[in-house]
Image 1 (cartoon, helix red, strand yellow):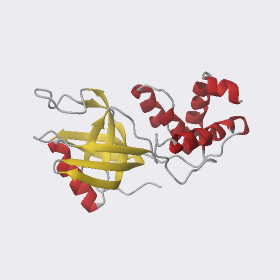
Image 2 (tube, one colour; image 1 turned 60 degrees about the horizontal axis):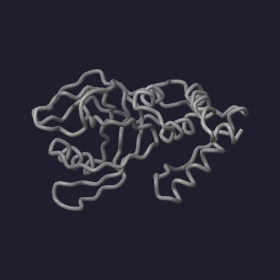
Image 3 (spheres, helix red, strand yellow; image 1 turned 90 degrees about the vertical axis):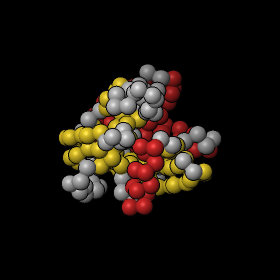
Image 4 (cartoon, rainbow, N blue to C red; image 1 turned 30 degrees about the horizontal axis):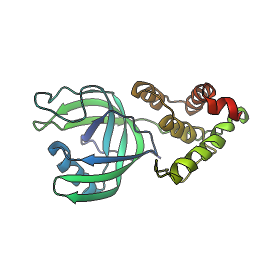
Length: 211
């Protein structure tokens, strides 16, 4: 479901990763430019935007301020767990919501990016074709194994009959580059995204042995 967005600009968090809708993203926050932003988002229950870096670094070093370049399409992240182990450090868990497109951006003096955005349509519910039913079957086994090993946090509820949800979870697990993940996240057709996942998985030992 799309969440209504106010006309006010939202804060952005450029990262070297891609957040998918319903995905889980843990973060450690220690930069001054993000500490106040995260505290305000947590208190107000409002999301911030995660966008993938195409140039620059996640953490500002001396002389690098303002050099981030990031994708125009991102995902809203809502804080679901918030801890402060000690002053100057937040440990949070976020969950991906709707995608958005940046239509205007500005950087504040302390380095925080603010953006005017327009929401993008959520994936329409889409049944999984019979020839691709091996993908949710493999996904269940993979998620159960990784969850038991405490390697990943598994988002719930599991919508294993929905092409977009299954495709997104595979995109998080497959060894894709950030650019490849970004392209998959931006695809408007969830069935096409799932078909591409199937092509990628078929090239692996898992795909070859499991069909």
